[in-house]
Amino acid sequence: QLVESGGGLVRPAGSLKISCSASGSGRLFGDYVSRWFRQTPEKERTFVAAISRNGARTYYSDFMKGRADISRRNIEITVWLQMYSLQAEDRAVYYCLADLRSDVAIIDADPSRYWGQGTEITVSS
Image 1 (cartoon, rainbow, N blue to C red):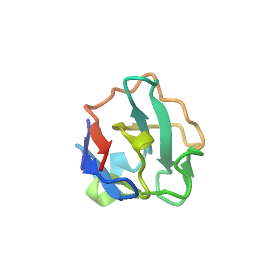
Image 2 (cartoon, one colour; image 1 turned 90 degrees about the horizontal axis):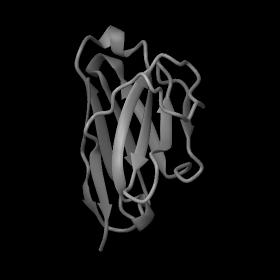
Image 3 (cartoon, one colour; image 1 turned 90 degrees about the vertical axis):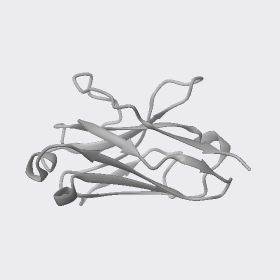
Image 4 (tube, rainbow, N blue to C red; image 1 turned 30 degrees about the horizontal axis):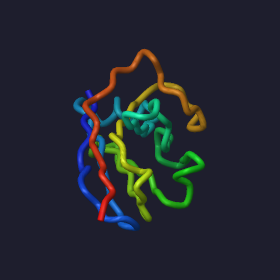
């Protein structure tokens, strides 16, 4: 069970850090690669960023590269996505998923995983 949080209203060019927390043990959480996706009513769910099981490797979508840092702390069973220079087009509901595929460059969602409720980010002045 993954729960996203930390979304809200942010001004253009602002920053925001969102979280994804899991229930269960830290050791099991560390077995999974974590990925962030986002979705708007106008677009399909889109890959944002991923982080390997131990946090050593990360991968970002082209639109988020250089504007975000994904991190994790397995003992806290949490993954974070720190985003910078947010713009109106970043407005979306952000979701996290955890799966057993080890390649962080996989950008599609594992269809066997369940989506959480997401956390919504609005970028507006």
